[in-house]
Image (tube, rainbow, N blue to C red; front, side, top):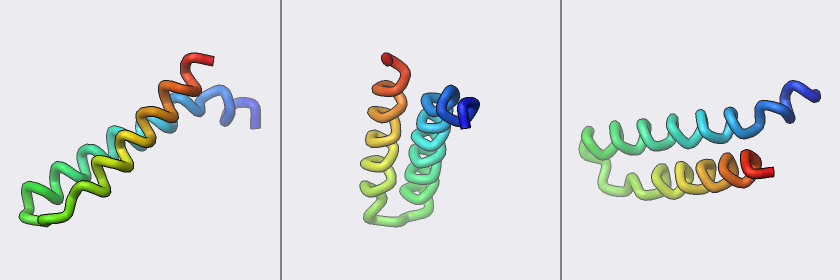
Length: 54
């Protein structure tokens, strides 16, 4: 459990990167409503930065 909590920042940053890539791929394939993926990426990025600053 300690290792999980110690790497929480890396987990959130990886999820943010994955959401961003998935949103870009969806947009390139013609999906019109890809903004939830970018919103999710911003949320994960904010969480990663918050846990990284503590």
